[in-house]
Image (cartoon, rainbow, N blue to C red):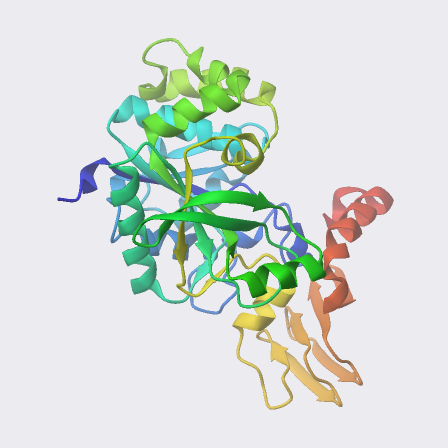
Length: 363
């Protein structure tokens, strides 16, 4: 029988999404934007799809303090006690550690799914079945489980997981992790059939992840252990403790700190129409194209001899283009970006350069 009452979801919602600049900005990151024109933002869609699996009262949002009002506005269903506000950016390991200690204080028998707020899932019934299978596994094994996506192309922007021995159903032991390979290696991975994209979606019990953090990153675990008794069930005490403690935590991802070190790491191989929607090219791939293979995001475009482009311009401005192929044309809040899709990995550097030259005006 499913232990639904003991199942929790942690939605990580603190990223800036700088690769979607200039649409995604520090003051309004991509998870708070309706990129797909569905009437729901990426955060809202993440919340919607987990509700069939986890009770609303067990869904937590972890975000930066500056986004508190955005979360409350977009998810009025979430109680304030379930919105954990980070006072500083410290990557995913401290974020997940705080959530694990918080949840364990509420429910020592808890199991958890941890998911970013900005992913897109197109086959939600298959997603639900996969998550239920994952929960059943971690609730019966001392295991850290990650979801591996069947790769459809030799992608160089994702991490890869090599599967080892099959354990149960779609679940295998993890053999190796590889971060963002070059194109030739990505082609080898794709051809082998042994490698899957690392989705960044995890399942485990609160007990298992706390144990792993103690072993792999004891400094982070010690920081959250140092809370006086009762802290994590007293909102005022927890806020004060986190304000003192969280900024001093090491900034490190859960992948580097735990998943690549622990010896009880497993992968569930899944295929449910996943995209981390991390880049303009990912949005292009997900969006309907016109007869010339262009994508227009709610804007007016006249295009001559153009194909494979994505046009994303806010407001009433008309875009007229001739001879463009495989470009990003994005205009928002005083910034016009024109960049070949093949060079979009440079967008992060462009944001940094704009900040160095003009301050925070265009960040």
